[in-house]
Image (cartoon, rainbow, N blue to C red; front, side, top):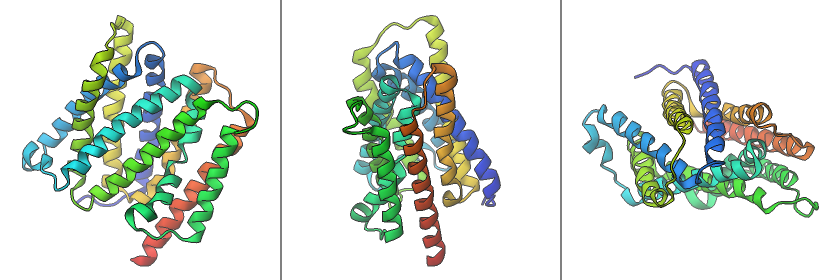
Length: 292
């Protein structure tokens, strides 16, 4: 059994968020030139091969890893995540990395809000207050009724909601299957569903763009491999707040590579969302320690 090392886990999480931010930037480059569904499909082909290779190395091999006690739930998770990625990549193209990630950062708050009715978990008034503050931040970012509201700004919110439901489904699946089985279904089901959809939108790609696609596939596999290592060496509650660094890295990439600007309302709203999310995570961690 691997010894817990939260400091190492935090640094691995920092590396993970950086890799995922770079992946998002490459996704934006490709999706601006080619159909989003095709881009995500090719990305999933590599990801599916990656999870199959990981599963084959586990004790008992593929057969044991694929043996799920809740197969329908696992299929639902895989389909939902694949579609969520399509929605988020579309958001990158429509409104850019900075604003997409600023809105998407609310997904932990959505998880907290939905964990009560969906999983039967108790959510105290402090976390409800944090959820309220976080959604105030989202409203500040979106500026509904402000005269410049764009319907496209709701796309990353839809993605965040889908990812929150995926996270809850993953937590529910953990009651029946281990993480290796869930990871296997995430990649394989996603690969199958995206092949069924994306193959109809195939477009010839320029040689230089195949290099971008290869880089996207590698960063995707690397990011997931790093994430596995994070949770192998550290407590989830200790490293989860550092996942918000993906917003920082993505915003920096938006500034440097895509000449995006950070509007004042987006900065203020994102700060509220992140602060509320970190507070909610810390409250959940304190509650878990008290229960122990």
